[in-house]
Image (cartoon, rainbow, N blue to C red; front, side, top):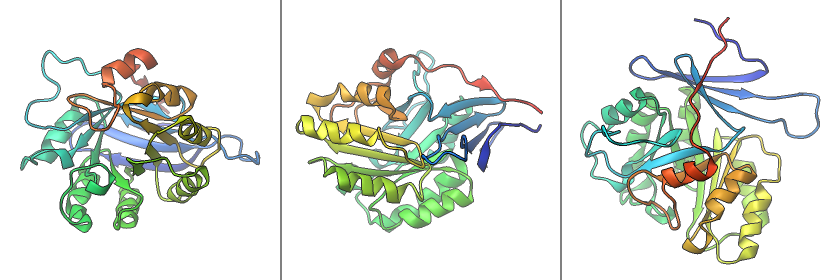
Length: 280
Protein backbone atom coordinates (compact mmCIF):
# COMPACT_ATOMS: atom_id res chain seq x y z
CA UNK A 1 0.00 0.00 0.00
CA UNK A 2 1.08 3.58 -0.63
CA UNK A 3 0.08 6.41 1.69
CA UNK A 4 -0.02 10.16 1.17
CA UNK A 5 0.33 12.87 3.79
CA UNK A 6 0.50 16.48 2.65
CA UNK A 7 3.35 18.79 3.57
CA UNK A 8 6.05 16.20 4.14
CA UNK A 9 9.61 17.53 4.28
CA UNK A 10 11.33 14.54 5.82
CA UNK A 11 10.29 10.89 5.92
CA UNK A 12 11.57 8.77 8.77
CA UNK A 13 10.05 5.29 8.73
CA UNK A 14 10.84 2.04 10.46
CA UNK A 15 9.71 -1.56 10.50
CA UNK A 16 9.06 -3.67 13.56
CA UNK A 17 9.22 -7.44 13.85
CA UNK A 18 5.81 -8.77 13.00
CA UNK A 19 2.94 -7.09 11.23
CA UNK A 20 3.13 -3.62 12.76
CA UNK A 21 4.86 -0.70 11.11
CA UNK A 22 5.40 2.66 12.77
CA UNK A 23 6.40 5.64 10.64
CA UNK A 24 7.52 9.13 11.63
CA UNK A 25 6.86 12.13 9.43
CA UNK A 26 8.24 15.63 9.87
CA UNK A 27 5.45 17.84 8.56
CA UNK A 28 6.15 21.55 8.05
CA UNK A 29 3.55 24.17 7.22
CA UNK A 30 3.91 27.33 5.14
CA UNK A 31 7.57 27.31 4.18
CA UNK A 32 7.42 31.02 3.35
CA UNK A 33 6.81 32.01 6.95
CA UNK A 34 9.77 33.55 8.76
CA UNK A 35 8.87 31.91 12.09
CA UNK A 36 9.81 28.32 12.87
CA UNK A 37 7.33 26.00 11.07
CA UNK A 38 5.01 23.75 13.04
CA UNK A 39 6.19 20.18 13.30
CA UNK A 40 4.47 16.87 13.92
CA UNK A 41 5.66 13.34 14.43
CA UNK A 42 3.34 10.51 13.46
CA UNK A 43 3.53 6.99 14.83
CA UNK A 44 1.89 4.68 12.32
CA UNK A 45 0.81 1.11 13.08
CA UNK A 46 -0.22 -0.50 9.83
CA UNK A 47 -2.93 1.87 8.60
CA UNK A 48 -3.34 3.62 11.96
CA UNK A 49 -1.59 6.80 13.13
CA UNK A 50 -0.82 8.48 16.45
CA UNK A 51 0.31 12.09 16.12
CA UNK A 52 2.79 13.78 18.48
CA UNK A 53 3.08 17.53 18.32
CA UNK A 54 -0.57 18.63 18.08
CA UNK A 55 -2.00 17.39 21.39
CA UNK A 56 -0.13 16.08 24.45
CA UNK A 57 0.44 12.32 24.42
CA UNK A 58 0.79 10.18 27.53
CA UNK A 59 3.90 8.02 27.89
CA UNK A 60 3.37 5.16 30.32
CA UNK A 61 6.55 4.02 32.08
CA UNK A 62 7.22 0.47 33.22
CA UNK A 63 10.16 -0.63 35.37
CA UNK A 64 9.69 -4.39 35.12
CA UNK A 65 9.25 -7.00 32.40
CA UNK A 66 8.66 -9.92 34.78
CA UNK A 67 5.04 -10.45 33.78
CA UNK A 68 2.96 -10.31 30.62
CA UNK A 69 2.02 -6.79 29.59
CA UNK A 70 -0.72 -5.89 29.54
CA UNK A 71 -2.37 -8.36 31.90
CA UNK A 72 -5.85 -9.62 31.13
CA UNK A 73 -7.36 -7.24 33.72
CA UNK A 74 -5.15 -4.23 33.01
CA UNK A 75 -6.52 -1.18 31.23
CA UNK A 76 -3.56 0.70 29.81
CA UNK A 77 -4.23 4.42 29.39
CA UNK A 78 -1.28 5.71 27.41
CA UNK A 79 -0.18 6.33 23.83
CA UNK A 80 3.44 5.16 24.11
CA UNK A 81 5.15 2.77 26.55
CA UNK A 82 8.59 3.63 27.95
CA UNK A 83 10.58 0.62 29.14
CA UNK A 84 13.09 1.59 31.85
CA UNK A 85 15.61 -1.16 31.25
CA UNK A 86 18.02 0.49 33.70
CA UNK A 87 15.60 -0.13 36.58
CA UNK A 88 15.17 -3.87 36.23
CA UNK A 89 16.96 -7.17 36.24
CA UNK A 90 17.25 -7.50 32.49
CA UNK A 91 15.68 -10.77 31.27
CA UNK A 92 17.50 -12.52 28.40
CA UNK A 93 14.47 -12.07 26.15
CA UNK A 94 13.89 -8.40 27.06
CA UNK A 95 13.73 -7.32 23.42
CA UNK A 96 11.10 -9.94 22.53
CA UNK A 97 9.03 -8.81 25.52
CA UNK A 98 9.23 -5.22 24.37
CA UNK A 99 8.25 -6.23 20.86
CA UNK A 100 5.25 -8.08 22.30
CA UNK A 101 4.10 -4.76 23.80
CA UNK A 102 4.38 -3.20 20.35
CA UNK A 103 2.35 -6.06 18.91
CA UNK A 104 -0.44 -4.99 21.27
CA UNK A 105 -0.36 -1.54 19.65
CA UNK A 106 1.92 0.66 21.77
CA UNK A 107 5.20 2.02 20.35
CA UNK A 108 8.00 1.30 22.82
CA UNK A 109 10.70 3.79 23.83
CA UNK A 110 13.77 2.15 25.34
CA UNK A 111 15.47 4.04 28.19
CA UNK A 112 18.73 3.14 29.97
CA UNK A 113 19.06 6.16 32.22
CA UNK A 114 22.49 7.08 33.56
CA UNK A 115 22.83 7.21 37.34
CA UNK A 116 23.97 10.85 37.29
CA UNK A 117 20.68 11.77 35.55
CA UNK A 118 18.39 9.96 37.96
CA UNK A 119 18.64 6.45 36.53
CA UNK A 120 20.06 3.19 37.78
CA UNK A 121 22.53 2.31 35.04
CA UNK A 122 25.63 1.46 37.07
CA UNK A 123 28.02 0.57 34.26
CA UNK A 124 30.08 2.74 31.97
CA UNK A 125 28.18 5.04 29.63
CA UNK A 126 29.65 3.42 26.52
CA UNK A 127 28.62 -0.06 27.72
CA UNK A 128 25.03 0.86 26.90
CA UNK A 129 25.75 0.97 23.18
CA UNK A 130 24.98 -2.69 22.44
CA UNK A 131 21.58 -2.42 24.15
CA UNK A 132 20.77 0.84 22.38
CA UNK A 133 21.71 -0.76 19.07
CA UNK A 134 19.35 -3.68 19.72
CA UNK A 135 16.61 -1.30 20.78
CA UNK A 136 16.99 0.90 17.72
CA UNK A 137 16.87 -2.10 15.42
CA UNK A 138 13.81 -3.68 17.02
CA UNK A 139 11.75 -0.99 18.76
CA UNK A 140 10.06 2.31 18.01
CA UNK A 141 12.79 4.46 19.52
CA UNK A 142 15.20 5.26 22.32
CA UNK A 143 15.86 7.98 24.91
CA UNK A 144 19.46 9.14 25.32
CA UNK A 145 20.83 11.90 27.57
CA UNK A 146 22.19 15.06 25.95
CA UNK A 147 25.27 14.86 28.18
CA UNK A 148 25.97 11.22 27.33
CA UNK A 149 29.27 10.43 25.64
CA UNK A 150 27.41 8.30 23.11
CA UNK A 151 24.56 10.69 22.28
CA UNK A 152 25.93 11.44 18.81
CA UNK A 153 26.41 7.83 17.62
CA UNK A 154 23.07 6.77 19.13
CA UNK A 155 21.18 9.65 17.50
CA UNK A 156 22.89 9.17 14.15
CA UNK A 157 22.24 5.42 14.19
CA UNK A 158 18.59 6.01 15.09
CA UNK A 159 18.22 8.44 12.19
CA UNK A 160 19.91 6.01 9.83
CA UNK A 161 17.48 3.29 10.90
CA UNK A 162 14.59 5.76 10.74
CA UNK A 163 13.70 5.50 14.43
CA UNK A 164 12.69 8.04 17.06
CA UNK A 165 15.45 9.46 19.25
CA UNK A 166 14.37 11.40 22.32
CA UNK A 167 17.31 13.47 23.57
CA UNK A 168 16.83 14.34 27.22
CA UNK A 169 18.32 16.60 29.86
CA UNK A 170 17.72 16.07 33.59
CA UNK A 171 18.66 18.06 36.69
CA UNK A 172 17.34 16.60 39.96
CA UNK A 173 18.68 19.45 42.11
CA UNK A 174 17.73 22.67 40.37
CA UNK A 175 16.42 24.39 37.27
CA UNK A 176 19.29 26.03 35.35
CA UNK A 177 19.01 29.61 34.05
CA UNK A 178 16.59 30.11 31.16
CA UNK A 179 19.42 30.98 28.77
CA UNK A 180 21.14 27.66 29.55
CA UNK A 181 17.95 25.68 28.96
CA UNK A 182 17.36 27.46 25.66
CA UNK A 183 20.92 26.65 24.60
CA UNK A 184 20.40 22.96 25.40
CA UNK A 185 17.17 22.76 23.39
CA UNK A 186 18.68 24.67 20.46
CA UNK A 187 21.64 22.30 20.24
CA UNK A 188 19.82 19.04 21.01
CA UNK A 189 17.10 19.64 18.42
CA UNK A 190 19.69 19.35 15.65
CA UNK A 191 20.03 15.63 16.50
CA UNK A 192 16.75 14.70 18.16
CA UNK A 193 13.30 13.70 17.00
CA UNK A 194 11.99 15.05 20.32
CA UNK A 195 13.82 17.12 22.97
CA UNK A 196 12.98 16.48 26.62
CA UNK A 197 13.86 18.83 29.51
CA UNK A 198 13.18 17.66 33.11
CA UNK A 199 14.35 19.73 36.07
CA UNK A 200 13.74 20.08 39.80
CA UNK A 201 11.45 22.99 40.61
CA UNK A 202 12.31 24.87 43.81
CA UNK A 203 10.26 28.04 43.39
CA UNK A 204 7.83 29.86 41.12
CA UNK A 205 10.68 31.36 39.09
CA UNK A 206 11.79 27.85 38.16
CA UNK A 207 8.29 27.04 36.95
CA UNK A 208 8.31 30.17 34.81
CA UNK A 209 11.65 29.20 33.23
CA UNK A 210 10.17 25.92 31.99
CA UNK A 211 6.92 27.57 31.00
CA UNK A 212 8.84 30.10 28.89
CA UNK A 213 10.44 27.29 26.86
CA UNK A 214 6.97 26.39 25.62
CA UNK A 215 6.45 29.88 24.20
CA UNK A 216 9.41 29.56 21.83
CA UNK A 217 9.35 28.12 18.32
CA UNK A 218 11.60 25.07 18.01
CA UNK A 219 12.56 22.77 15.16
CA UNK A 220 11.45 19.68 17.05
CA UNK A 221 8.60 18.86 19.43
CA UNK A 222 9.55 19.74 23.01
CA UNK A 223 8.69 17.89 26.20
CA UNK A 224 9.06 19.89 29.43
CA UNK A 225 8.73 18.31 32.90
CA UNK A 226 8.86 19.95 36.33
CA UNK A 227 9.94 17.54 39.07
CA UNK A 228 9.21 17.58 42.79
CA UNK A 229 6.20 16.60 44.95
CA UNK A 230 5.21 20.25 45.44
CA UNK A 231 5.02 20.81 41.68
CA UNK A 232 2.93 17.85 40.60
CA UNK A 233 0.40 20.23 39.04
CA UNK A 234 2.94 21.10 36.32
CA UNK A 235 2.77 17.50 35.11
CA UNK A 236 -0.67 18.45 33.78
CA UNK A 237 -0.17 22.17 33.25
CA UNK A 238 2.85 21.96 30.93
CA UNK A 239 1.19 19.50 28.51
CA UNK A 240 -1.81 21.83 28.43
CA UNK A 241 0.57 24.66 27.47
CA UNK A 242 2.23 22.73 24.65
CA UNK A 243 4.62 20.13 26.07
CA UNK A 244 4.29 17.27 23.58
CA UNK A 245 4.60 14.37 26.06
CA UNK A 246 3.36 13.69 29.60
CA UNK A 247 5.12 10.89 31.48
CA UNK A 248 3.20 8.75 33.98
CA UNK A 249 3.98 5.42 35.58
CA UNK A 250 2.23 2.14 34.77
CA UNK A 251 3.75 0.16 37.65
CA UNK A 252 5.72 2.46 39.98
CA UNK A 253 6.97 6.09 39.87
CA UNK A 254 10.35 6.65 38.21
CA UNK A 255 10.78 10.34 39.09
CA UNK A 256 9.84 12.73 41.95
CA UNK A 257 6.22 13.88 41.75
CA UNK A 258 5.36 11.59 38.85
CA UNK A 259 1.65 10.81 38.46
CA UNK A 260 0.25 7.54 37.20
CA UNK A 261 -0.46 7.29 33.49
CA UNK A 262 -4.11 6.69 34.38
CA UNK A 263 -4.30 9.92 36.41
CA UNK A 264 -2.65 11.90 33.61
CA UNK A 265 -5.03 10.43 31.06
CA UNK A 266 -8.06 11.32 33.18
CA UNK A 267 -6.91 14.94 33.47
CA UNK A 268 -5.65 15.37 29.91
CA UNK A 269 -8.25 13.19 28.23
CA UNK A 270 -8.03 9.47 27.60
CA UNK A 271 -5.86 8.42 24.63
CA UNK A 272 -7.85 8.55 21.44
CA UNK A 273 -7.91 5.55 19.11
CA UNK A 274 -5.42 5.88 16.24
CA UNK A 275 -6.89 7.34 13.06
CA UNK A 276 -6.75 5.68 9.68
CA UNK A 277 -3.97 6.77 7.33
CA UNK A 278 -4.84 8.26 3.96
CA UNK A 279 -4.58 5.64 1.22
CA UNK A 280 -3.57 6.54 -2.31
